[in-house]
Image (tube, rainbow, N blue to C red; front, top):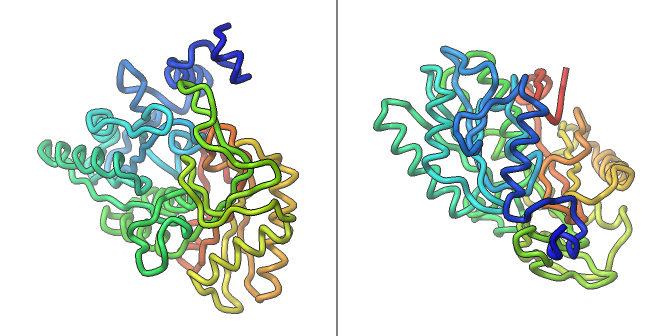
Length: 340
């Protein structure tokens, strides 16, 4: 074992081969659900695709966030994903290969997070696909309240709330809806979801071998991004109830939700937070919403968008109406999650 791997205390072979070996293992484990359409395995699609006449949905982004991005390919969700290196965008060519492989003749919708490299490469892929008469539309996820102030929502990052865009647009596409309709649902989901996160520890990029930032003993950082982007407040660690109150109140200030409304709640672990703690936070969130007479229709608790081994969590709230509730309840199946 190399000194770098030993120093990091990770189960690795070569730090430079983390993504390649992870993808090889993923394809070996889930060959019934996923297949690669590139020799470098950086373009994964449904094993039984494409679906003729169905709008195809594609995403992509840097590795290090499992199950985001590549963990959401499957019936009721996505059709394909382009895979980048740790915290790095996939290339336009990788995305184009995904687009070609999933196109069933009804067009392709790109859904991805609002990060500079991703925006540039996905826009380029869309242009290249258009030259091949593949129609592509795009919805960029912007659910992270902490990343930009209210009024500048278009500049926000996409984080765990992106799950809801995949889920709702994927369900609409399974209904054989048009590309315009699937895009409309994804935009509606994005307009009605907000996320706030908190981090307790940094993460280590394998190729670097040490944390790229620090959080002091006894400290936490509210609003830190999934790549370690600075948050909006750093202070002493608070109780689960206090953290939940801070995150929920910030979300509700940004997206007012009236008494009697329904929401879906997503409590997301960032990689090293035990499920026990996530459920304790969900308990707090549920009680806070109940006090405001806001009803929880369907909660999701677990890991949906991680940051390597970062300790921390995020809370997402999706404001529901009849259409979004029906789409949320539709079944889906991916290598990481199943909803019947």
